[in-house]
Image (cartoon, rainbow, N blue to C red; front, side):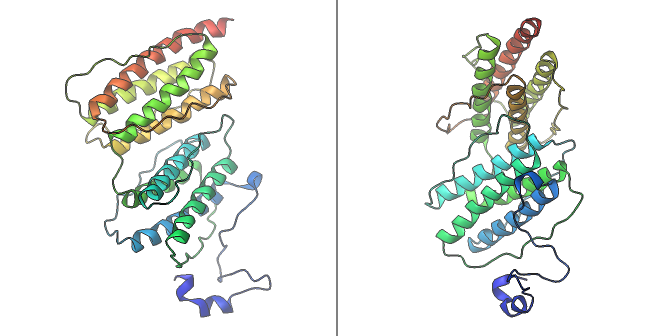
Amino acid sequence: MKLGMKAAVAACCLGLSGALALPGEALSQEVKYEEATPSHVYQATSDLISEIEILREEMGITVYPVEAELQEDRAPVHVYAKSLEVLEKISAAQRRLGIDPARIGQIPVKDIIPGDVYRSVQNSLAEVRRIKEELVIEEEIRPAPLEGGKTPTYVYQHLGDASFLLDGLVGHPVDPNDVYNHIMFLHDEMELIAAKLKVALDLDAPVVDQRKRMKAVAQQVLRATFKIINLQTRLGMDASGVPQITLVRVSPAEVYEATNVLLAEMVRIKAHLDIQLPREEHAMARNKRPRDVFSQVLRLIRNLDILAKAAVDYQAT
């Protein structure tokens, strides 16, 4: 039931405050930052998905994407990284439509709480509504009810559904360019960590002449994941688990998601080392092939080894 189509029903459900109150439902409304729970983030994401579906319908996008799989043990920092992935796609869709794109930002260097993720999702919600306003789309959503008992893992999956739905608005699914750009973000974050540990990193990626598939890239990203866990352990941190990567029929989207998790883990290291500086912003790379990504991941692995050795000396001081 769309609000714009059911005005008469909505009118009879207005309470004394003038807010819409459909029987038996808790409406989606903003909560205080410190009071937000994963269930509130899930509710806001449901509203975001409904808004995206309105845009997809207006654009005539009929191909429905795959649904996101449930990824176990997702922490708020991983969910925040996923929310930035969603905002990145919203920004790309805005650019495609000739609308000033949203600024993406970075993961805050702090202990991420549900309120941080809630703000990020609300930002994405505002940006999607800005698209509707620019395109003069007046159809409204039916606000989502609040469902209790949601965990960061379920919010992560829900944001994954929003991300897949946005591919139709962007005009293409995740490709090697997106993965390459995320690897470069990782390099930039590692430079800040290296400066803290007083060590120089390798700036040159090895030359890869042979053709590579995304499966080969995924294998190296998995190696990098074990390396970053080792680095966290050597720094005296509570190391995270290994993200799931299906190494059968690997898509760029799966590798992109794995690098997104690595970015979150890199920010956890920055927070542990009290590195407050943000990484530098660079122009996005284009026309990259899987072998280009493969080369940069090999460089990533090499530098993670360098940081792991430096961490031992840092802990000894």
